[in-house]
Image (cartoon, rainbow, N blue to C red; front, side):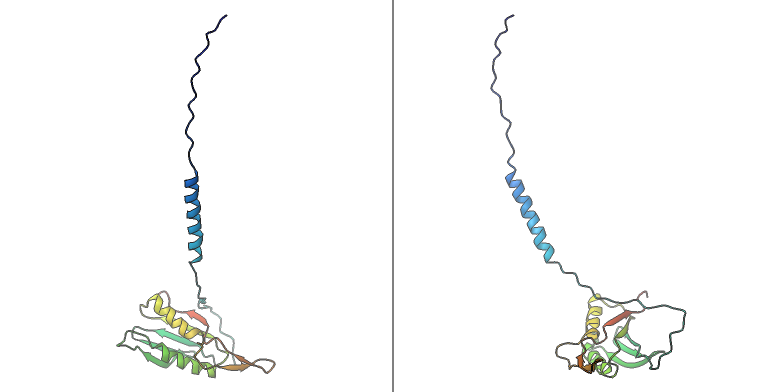
Length: 177
């Protein structure tokens, strides 16, 4: 049987997508994501929670310093001992708008000279205080600055060791009110 020759139609080619610009934009996007992730720094300021116990604390030869810093709306009040007794009140400066952290810091340096091994302070915010104010207060009680006079203590070998921390163990009290 005879078949007629079929007409050959020219095949039309489908256009291909140009993926190069899409891949370029994806790689640029990834590059910017990686570069921006290095710019984010996360800082942590460690703080302990108060210990609640029904047991009596162990007897100590020395009375504990038991420093407590109450943050009030118009002043900072430093307490010491068990039961707490007031040590000093630091009134706000600049018409009551700013806490007097310089006087607080110099007073704490004097206390550190007397109680070299003490590291703990309890901070009790009794007023509405911003996060920035709490951080400034924590920074002023935690470590010595380069401009502060050095305090040294003897180690077991009799060598003088410079103390770098003022009251670095910060415990927050009264944080639920």
